[in-house]
Image (cartoon, rainbow, N blue to C red; front, side, top):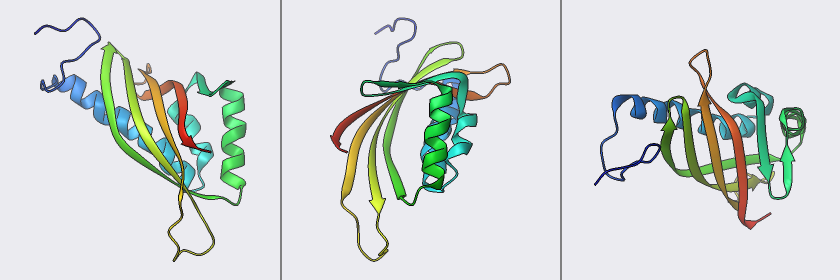
Length: 149
C-alpha cells in the first residue's frame, strides 16, 4: 500500500524524523493546556507563531486577541483542568504537521474533595510549523466544541 505525500499509513512505523516531530508537537499541544491549568496562560504565547490564529466556533482570534484571552485566563478565579486524549498526528511536509486531540475540560470548585462534572468535550485541530530556530509552534488551532460549554 502506498501513501501520497503528506499522508501516513496507520500502523506503519514512522521514520525517525517523523517520530521526533511527533514528540515535539505533542509536547507543545500538552503544554498549551498545562500552562493554562497552572495559571501561566500567557506562557502559552511562546508556543504559537507570531501570526497564529485560533478559531473557536464562529470567532477567529489573531495573536493579539489570543494574548488578551490568555491574560484573562491567567488572572481569573476559575481553576481549570484540561484532560487531553490521545493525539493523532501526521507530517504534511518538511516543517509542517497536523494534529487532532480530543479534550475534556473540568472546572474545579472550591471544595477539592468533590469531583466536578465534565464541563466540555472539544476537538482541537492544530496546524504546526517548525520555525527557523527549530522549535515547533502552533500556526493555527481550530477548537470545535462537541458537547458542553
